[in-house]
Amino acid sequence: MNAAAALLIAGALVQFFVGSLAYVGDTLKGKSKPNRMTFLIWAAGPFIGVAAGIAAGAAWWALLPVFVAGLGPFAIFLSSFKNPAAYWRLGVLDYTCGALALTALILWALTADPTTAIIAAILADALASFPTISKSWKYPETETGFTYFAALCNVSLGLLVTPSYTFSQIGFLVYLFIADLILTVATNRPWLRKKLGSSPD
Image (cartoon, rainbow, N blue to C red):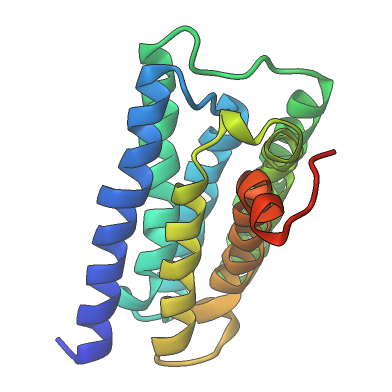
């Protein structure tokens, strides 16, 4: 095992056991209220992205940040059923995004092409993100901001030590970097406003 692989494995473990499990704990307490539709698709999208990446020849260890990006949401999705108060009410936007995301995954299944799989998985993940991004911006107290920051750090590490910059290797990582950056800012907006000396909306 080379140094880059060891570094990514360590980063993935930290993200899951520190970042993701922090969200799980807050969910069980009823503090964080994950959108189940979002987190279910957030789990499926990265798993498909990893499978497609490996099929396209990407190094398995370089895809660890993507795998953990699916494992964490899956654990959070499961934990949401342990506390009736630990979920957000689904609306038209949630169901619409969920339907569009599932459609994207079905289109990939029909083509069975790794590149198409990665693109479809990114599209599905992005569509599923909209309800949680909206909720995070309006109600940041319903999310665990540290979880997204930990994910952002791990994805950044993956981009720095990736063995190649092919689409199969970094396509999902680039998307995750953008998504986690947006969610990190949205969920930590009150803290950022306080540090910058701005008054809340």
